[in-house]
Length: 163
Image (cartoon, rainbow, N blue to C red; front, side, top):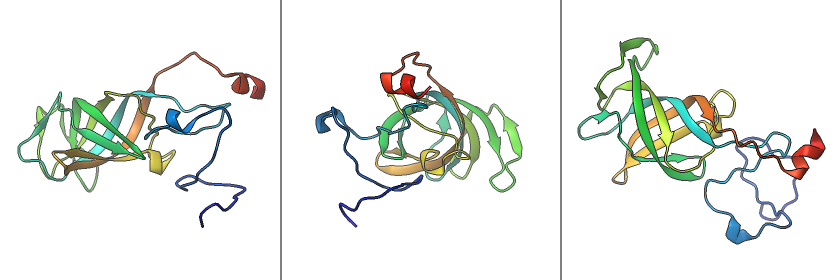
């Protein structure tokens, strides 16, 4: 299993690889490898569908717990609670609630406080699901429904060659 050569890996596979010119000290948790012609982009904000599992009081706008998504572990702010939804039918129950509590499902706008790459759950399930932890307890779980990505404007030499 270890140190086997593979010709192809698919989404969700855990693989190791080496890149010439990049030292191991430059790599850290949460980094994402992508095709040079279509590089992964940093998320500015994203809309998520969450289910609050265990929170002692309530969650309101401005709450900033730790989000675990793929291998990233970053603080992420609940910028705005867009709506409270039914857990089974996903029908909107209340638009713009002031807060949500344990057992509630909601659509929320989240803003990462550090650079992170996330994708819509429909596009890439492993990059689109996450857990929210606070005080070492799982507070909520969710999936990314839409992403607003930062535009870098930068392009590498390799990406220019593939165009």
